[in-house]
Image (cartoon, rainbow, N blue to C red):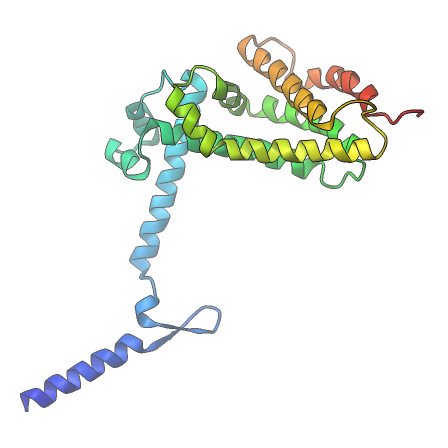
Length: 241
């Protein structure tokens, strides 16, 4: 009798283990593949905690730079324990790399989306100048972090960023070079290499923005855009125009 009961219990357990559950999309998943409400809540809480830590780290790095920031103060600002920070990030280097990637992606996405509907590649490049200055003016913390990526960082951090965060910068630079190449095909940039032009444009904007951050005055950074536009416009005009 006992063996029969055990056999029945095992059969019921096995049936429940493979019992399909209705999913939101109307399909079916085995019961064992469903996540519990508790697991989903834990994932949401972890994601929110991670966002809070990154926001605190971004502010700290913008204010004090990499060297002057301590992980403990990031934890305090995010109102989490030090163990929580180290549970999500290996250390200050990884925090910095993540913040840099996020900052660079924010800038790149904003600029590219802003010129998406402009068909003329030369006009796109001129609008890139406007959008970069506007983005840095609106998000000064991003500019501080962006400007600090090649200054005052330990060698090991620069090496690590070269493997990870640098990819974001490279993607934006390639996109900018492509716009310059399209401009050259249309007759602009007479006698000027497209890559040289693209790097000169981004270098000019970021150098001016970095100086503005270091020596803030009454003027908005956006006020610098017209002069930089005037500098690059003659190079973008096709020969004979």
